[in-house]
Length: 291
Image (tube, rainbow, N blue to C red; front, side, top):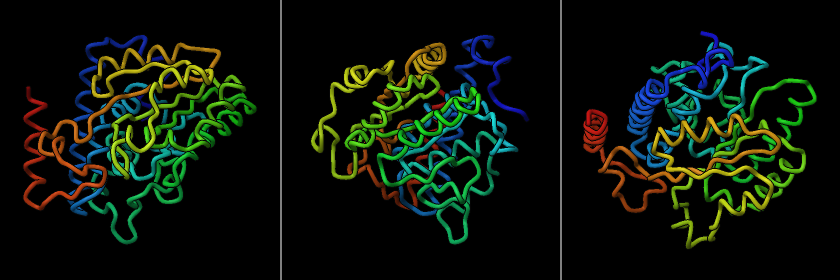
């Protein structure tokens, strides 16, 4: 397998309806993978994984150029996970992409596992940076994009951030640097689920109007429903074609998306799920996919 998306066989030549259905199926499997991993520990950042699954499915199924069997392929597009606690979501996507074996998900968070609860580049194939201390990812993306430019390498750099990460001043310093250097191969993706560790994002530190702020920093900015696959496809296609400045896609997502049982859960930033609820969650996920 060379890559899921190549310049020759990419979004421009594929039938849109087929692309959307392929992504929807991938998102379902990513959510299922995340639930299976969450059950290993009985708790975790499962709500974020369910919420961002459509975004990750679109990126890995439809946009990213990579080789699952060669995670260090020099011409790969880079996907940086700033928010290390979203590791469960990334592992679920990497298993769907074929970069890590699906059966390895059973070791999630266990001793000697390659899948620690916070993502670490030294442990896991396909993980480009060690995340966790929020605010570093976009700066790394800027430096990586500059390095690729100097090498004459046209690979793209994606950075997934959270809305809580926009509280960090270093994120905005990096945003200025990306715009200053015209890094149009950088695409930031902001998961706006309106929740962070200390409570609702709007109450901790208000970031709205966030789209206008990115534009004021010199970025090409779009905002979509991050759980609407068709909207994601159209937005990523537009960002791929844009040149002259970095791009950001602001994605409004719902914690626990696809599992009503978990969508309605309070204190959902770090979620405890009872033993009997995991199968209920899988059943609800499958019922939703069948509609």
